[in-house]
Image 1 (cartoon, rainbow, N blue to C red):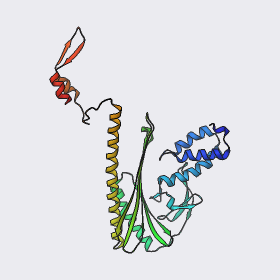
Image 2: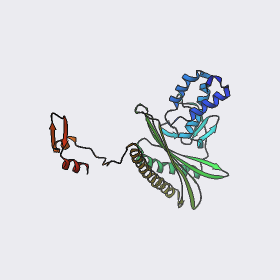
Image 3: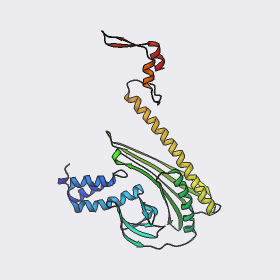
Image 4: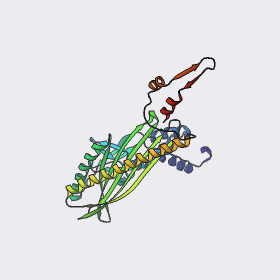
Length: 299
């Protein structure tokens, strides 16, 4: 269906849906491509703002405020396209298309025991992230639901290699309630990769987890929580690598007409050629290999 025959509301719905589907790191590219098709600057700007806000929440887009990393998510949304950062105590809007903060305002928070615990957990999580992620970011947020206090830890690392035709994102989210003796940690790990050289391949893998933690004191809780995250994310990473390896082998077997031995080692062709007994028949123009050498090579 041509966009020219759609109503304005239908255009808005189509544009927003296409922009929200943009993979991590490719929102601006998708927006620029759509601008060439729509040719309505006002319409695109409004839809780009709406979709960009949702994109930031979905993929935990990282920012830096006063040198401190901030991860945008739906947990620190304030409404009217605004986000809140607990570390800097600032609320702001973020223009994803321009990659800049707007309308920055001071916003106070209540200093209590939960806020102190949030900082302790954040310090322990930063140590874990710095040891395991090349360019990782993390943040810990507070939330009150029905008079119950929760801490929400978010981790994000990405590698956007658009010039090499691939982008990848790792993110995880961990939530637990502040209880006196025992708390349940609910987690979700998510990995997405997009390859677009010769093929258009999207990979999305996620896992939901539930674990329990005993609470002795704040320092112990922070360290136990960081160890729990490390253990579960390591298990997930190993499982993902094994699954992708199996998927790669399965795809290779389907492409080939028959199974071939795969050694995944470099072949020294010069040595092989020197070991082979080559007998050239000039008149016939073909090479006959010594059968015993060839069989040993294949085996």
